[in-house]
Image (cartoon, rainbow, N blue to C red):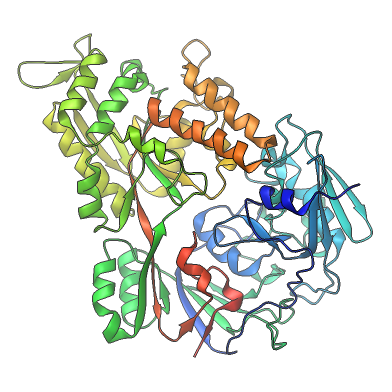
Length: 571
């Protein structure tokens, strides 16, 4: 098999620097060993990487698991990690990795290529063995890779080029066969490594779980077998222990940071001015980065159980009217304290794929334009100012949101006020997260706030494709969670068909320029037809004790602190 040229690898990893000779046994870092780090967190649901996909679980997993590749600061697979070399065949169909030798799991057992093979063939490529199935590992033709092992090299081959393979394969946590194969054999793998058996968790990451106190704290200690060393030969990480302190709210976390109980904190925009005002006195470093890689939006249920509302929400003029009433300038100045950015489409402006042309569909705040769009959509007003549809039904609906997200609550409050001024009654319902997610999955809501995103838009298929498992606002009848979503009532406009085509084609387009063109069209179609109403997002905000040191990468990154915990150190 021929190896692909370095230029092609650079394109596929999206202009990341790649050197086959680079060996990450030795990292180009230099710090001071010892000390502890205290960070904010929540109780994880599971420590099983195949099922612990909630934010709290991922927050812990980032400290303890490793994959074949590392992300760069922009969120793209770049550096060899558990592999020491990787390449793609000239036809773009085969992705290969040379696995590092002589490494050990946190329990001292040897790490081998068999762990890698088993992780994929027995876990991630088997639909029922992961929370979201195995579709992210498929090519656009729907086939899973053929896995082959030769010596210390493992290869994944599809029937056509798979542009997402370096990410979906390279950034998947590798699991220990010797520790988990018993769960697979007896059919209990989904419940493996639950929060009641943290002592059984075996990992390759810089830290291991020492203690777990539900509702209080997770204590992580240095992995004595971690495989990275610094330039002086010191086995990383530098920090001896990390205390993840469970907070019930951002206000509690902020108070802990102010009291010195937390060393690192990612404040909200609302909290940032307060943190900044105390920085000199408290000896903190406080800074603002780029916009978060999240797209935040308000979605209307095209399959609402009420057929009257269903017709409103499918009406493009109705959605554009809502967009014109989204007073983003006010939202940015008040809710985000000037520390945010307007969202115009499905990608954040921090994405390398972002096309500024979407800003031509800015829907700047204008009640006049909102009224005009409603008229175009067949809506009128009664003499008392109530907005009604063409059948005389008063326009009223419910917006679901989560009370713990003060920014979502603020956005909904601003919007509801503006809607009331043009005769639309939008009430707000607050729900806990579990109920919120249940409502979204069941399709039994009028409208709700949400955020989706990431560095790689190709992975947003599950959100924006009509058959995506998180296409909450217009589930396909095949999803079959609600009886009211049927073939007869299903809404599938031409613009959604084009979005589906783009998201399917991009899976095998590896050329960066072609991918940019596809995702440019994707953004423009979304902005023009507005299936969801985009709002605003916060900048990445950082605050940490001046005794904490880290690499310079954080200032332009797409991550919160601490991103690379193995090279963080303190005085």
